[in-house]
Length: 300
Length: 300
Image (tube, rainbow over all chains, first blue to last red; front, side, top):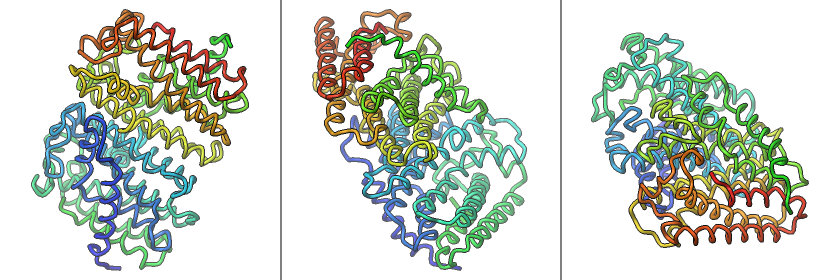
């Protein structure tokens, strides 16, 4: 089950970086494209795109398609837009992201607002290339999945709960609901879009992959809460300790540091078990297993 | 060619209002849906949805489909999101819209930012219902058209030019380019999506409708510039005279009031001519002709 994740990741990351760089034209009205490129390129772990590609390879014949590469870029654009807007003064008011000044610091608030808006739109543009390269049903499925995962009943709804919950004490169920929407929905969607790019994937595989995506998404957020406490800003590439400073509810605040770490490990084990339940050949699951381990063991 | 536009509009407006009200669930995370409903419902002329429906009826068999109603709602959601973000303090900083306090005044900036984001997402959700109600190729076509019209090479790009051009003197060509993107792209897209909802529409019809949409879009903006000077805030439902106050380039500033009015009339005549060139039966073009007249003769 162990694999050299780095050897798998390198060519996949290169494809994603190249495709992301190519999807924003160098020439753009009033340098809007420049702010968008700044927000998207040269940074980020690309976890969501890698999940799309690894899932498409696992559920398909081991090769990922143009559809999967488009979906990989689209979900990263949604993630990037959410960070740009989340960092703005009226939201988290953060000045550092991936070790660089945030977009509104670099380009001003108005351009950051527009760049975020346009990054979201671009995600849906990427998902609908000419119908020669990706079939219309796959295009429609991917748009449906991404829009539902990122809208008011998904990511944006989770951010609204997050805003409303500052200084509030949440139950574990409420905290899980917030994170299921705010972070989990896009991670689950990465897995679901990867599967949607493989026509004819079985219901068994889809169901098990959904459980995988849900467990992985929650594990990611628990680890995020742990890192906010244990890592420093330089390692994190963003301001550490800001959840605590902002009096935000977190798993660490709720259950303590050690229990939160143990909870992340148990969620990772659930994710691994769900992969087994796909019934797919172990060799094709190796990248998804390695990405799961990376999520739990990461230090930023 | 004359028709009772009001008799045509009333049932169409009712369908659009009902569909818009139904597309945002009453229950939503942290009242995000409330801010979205406030931004979208009980206001607005619904010009873009009416253009979608009138075009689908003209190009089709005189009836508009579920696909056209979805497209009508989607483009209004994009329009609504752009207004919410455009009104924010870091952009136009406007406090009055459709005679009501703007969303950020009513709900705070963070919620306004999220509501705008989620309204955009919802547009793409509406365009991708289950594939039983709208065929996958129509879904993919509509998403492709809407994303391209509203993104960084469309509406958002036009807004970036607008921001960058405050206090600048633009040539007529530059002004036209700004408006072609900022306002024209969505109006043209309304017409193009209406046609895309009619499978098998001919190239002649598509080409003539594109010319129609381009002329109408530019006419709309020229009239907007005229109204900013000639109407008062109460009639306009938003702050009058704000272009001049903000030292923004406008057609009135560029060519004077009378010439701007004459230019709007000549663009409307071009739009009418393009409708003739579709070769569609006059009876089916009546609503589009009446909407064109309304755009030029409106007082708000």
